[in-house]
Image (tube, rainbow, N blue to C red; front, side, top):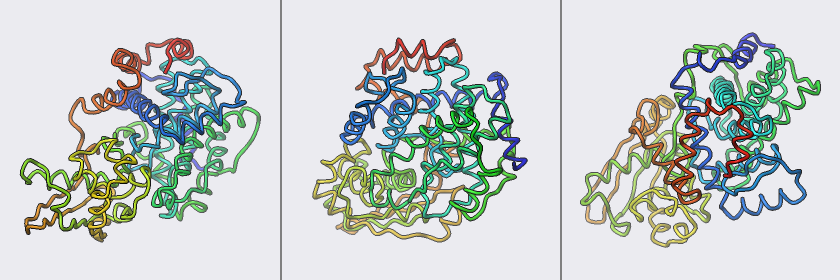
Length: 450
């Protein structure tokens, strides 16, 4: 096995949470909390309700949460359903350096395993932190092909590592686990999100369920390729793999601290255009313009954002991956909300008309600056000849442009209170920000319905 990957596996087996970076530990707890609300909200969409009921018919019972439903099932089905729901509304945490969303692929499996094993709360935090760190570093090292969607790929490794931590795997077993999990990901397609195909949402659920399966396989004696990670990510799903970067600043730089929380229910690259639009509207009277008064919107941005240029949107899910739609619906509604991306917004003729008046293109220099900068420029050309311009250099929420203190907490309560009520939402924050004080997470969860 590659030395760097072996060192990373050994690192994942560290047992002392007190020795970890305090900021990373705190952020891991908020990644869990943020994931819970994203899952609960996503669990309410019709397709998820149908999948949940179809899955539970004849499913093995269990003690694991189906978040947002007050119901429970076995660990594998809980990880599958929770992970799938968690990406549906595009509100889940992510990390540009990792090329994806480690958290929502790790958290569902870690929660399910912690409940099933009745692990300590401290072990749950370590599991999420290590699953995130290992998978994010693999994502960073991966020379991903543009045709690949990163969900459902290295997420299986992150979920497996989290389960391995909770099961107390040795360094040698963790190494085998990573190699086994490396070949349990999906051959995912980026076109699914460009076309608004909702099969894409199962990718993250698949990661969680495969992580649980990989751990069981290793316990049963299964083996993987000697260097499955290099093989899959350097040859099958990518054109290169920078193995030395796996251990660069290991234990000093925690990639979870470089992640972002979302305030808009869209694909992350769209946030650059939303930030630029917000700046442009600052100079408009009252901070708003009427959609009918906009002659044209010109957007210049980096390649991954420029690809999200669909102007013929026919579904709420597809709306979340279109910069023209995001601009049009935010101008029409006056703000970025869940309602601005629902089916009624998609059916709105004024939004659809403005969507077709958005001119998008890639700027090579902006692409070259990515991912350190996520540059987007926008110009609103009004019917009366007035122009409003805005610019985004680094998206809000990135480590270099963080949200103000308390905004992530505010987002949590905004999503949590409608489903759980203020008292239960407050208790969730209290208990999960002190997870290390919970001696038996399974027992705690048994008395705490979500």
